[in-house]
Length: 175
Image 1 (cartoon, rainbow, N blue to C red):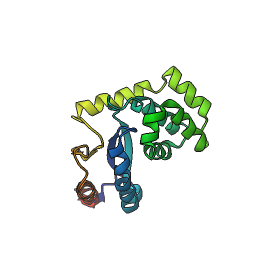
Image 2: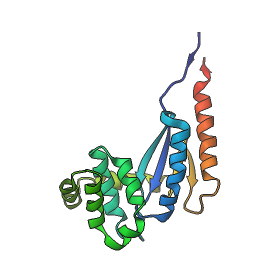
Image 3: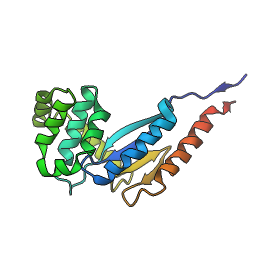
Image 4: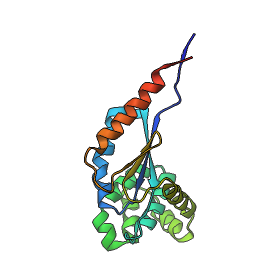
C-alpha cells in the first residue's frame, strides 16, 4: 500500500522592499503565479528593506500591521503601486493607505511609534542576509534562490519550473 505525500502547498518566499520599483514590477508575476497555482503555492512576503529607500523600513512595519489586521497582501500590493508617492511623502502615505483599505490607521500610527513589528522585520532581513539575499525582489523556492534584483527576464518561468518540479515530487507515491 502506498500513500501520497501531501505536505501542504509549495512555499515561495518573496523578499521585497516595499519602496522598490522592481518589486512593483514583480507583482504581475506574483498575480500570474497565484492564478496558475491557487492554493498549491503559498506566496509569503518577506521583508528586505534596502538602505537606499528611506521609507522602506517603516513600510515593512506597516505591512506587518496590515497583516495583523487581516489585509497584509492587499496593503503590500497597494503600497507597491505607490512607490514614488511613498518616496516623496513618507509615513503619512502609509497611514493614508491604511485608511483607504478600511484598516485602523490610528493603530498603524501607534505601531510605527511603539515598534511592535520591528522584530519581525529585523528577523526577515537577518534571514535574508543569511540566505545571501542582496537585492529585491529575490525569491526562494525549494531551497533555490532566484535573484530578480538584477533583472526579471525569465524569472517567472524559472519559478514555475521549480514549483512544477516540487509539486510533481509531492504527487509521487512514497514507499
